[in-house]
Image 1 (cartoon, one colour):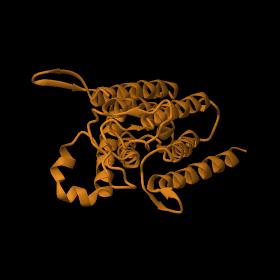
Image 2 (cartoon, rainbow, N blue to C red):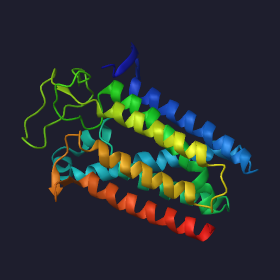
Image 3 (cartoon, one colour):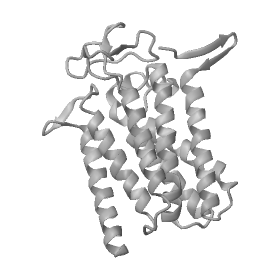
Image 4 (cartoon, rainbow, N blue to C red):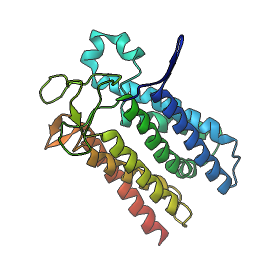
Amino acid sequence: MYPVLLQNEPFTIYSLGVLWALAAVCAGYIVRLELKRYRLDPELASSMVFAAAAGGLIGARLLFILEEWTHFLRSPWDFILSGAGFSWYGGLIGGLLAVSWWVRWHRLLWLKAADIAAPAGALGYGVGRVGCFLAGDATWGKVTDVPWAMAFPNAVAGWVDPLTGVPYAPGVRVHPTQLYEVAQSLFVFGVLWILRKKRYPQGTIFWLYLALAGSMRFLVEFWRANPVIALGMTEYQWLSFILVLLGGCLVYRNGMRAK
């Protein structure tokens, strides 16, 4: 793919960094629009997105390190300094914690802030996944011969098939799961953006985001090369199942309360 967009010594511009920056800009724009709609200060958008991005990156890297603890102990600095290796659920948890701190600092209602942030989170994640695709980052999809299968010969990180322990060959064709997640995230964003103006109880849009994002991740795991841990499901499918259950129950509770 295109992990490096421009290289002119001593400067190198990486596609992953550029798209992640663009994701933050897109998320900030959506948050700004929502803050205006709620008659709150739109200038808060930049600090909210910065808190979410910083917390998300830290959380994503920490959970990835925990998941790869044995490999981390062998070469810790490679993990810390590498531009690859992040966990989506770690990012979600880290981002939630950081935004929760931000909400408390600015004395806002948590559920209102969560509803404001949900569409932005979905859109930002989708844009960021384009960067993962260009860089060849994120766990690859399973080997396949479908017409849209792709190879990642210039990927920023080499990946090992978790089922066999054998490294993927540079030209092996796999499911482009990053693009699957881009499409899923845009779908989730579209649903949330359409529903956000309806008169739901506070928190409904955020709970719906959790349910939709969890279900999308559950589905894409069928094409990702992650090991099964129990009952035919991967670690991330179990986490997704919990997220869907939590979000779905809270959406249902809010709907019942609205009646």
